[in-house]
Image 1 (cartoon, one colour):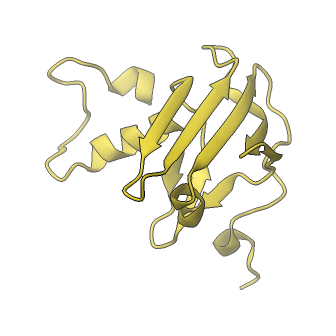
Image 2 (cartoon, one colour):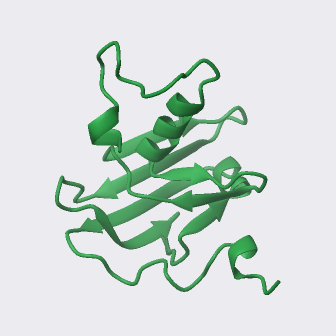
Amino acid sequence: IIKQNYNTSRKGVPGNDDSGSMASWYAFHAMGFFPNAGQDVYLISKPTFEKTTINLENGKQFTIVAKKLTDKNIYIQSATLNGKPYTKNWFTHKEILNGGVFEFEMGSKPTSWGSKDLPPSMSDDK
């Protein structure tokens, strides 16, 4: 969707973006995560950039690094958060506010990374 529908032309943002929803969707996905509405949970997706840094109001930084990211290496092989292995395909807003470095090792083939620990709302028995 990003490659096909977003660009720097006058029509570079699809649909009506008066409220910023399409632009914010793009910004989150380009960083490699997006909010799950109504929760403090972010779901992880493929980053568009090799490195993105968010400067937080509390003076900390939250940096996302995608190692070996190419047009073919679109799958997350493994991840670390502040140097520790990270196996979930989601994280919380508190983890952003704490600052740190989220690193993804990218590859050309899908793996089982992130397939076991679902976000709380998706794994609760209802």
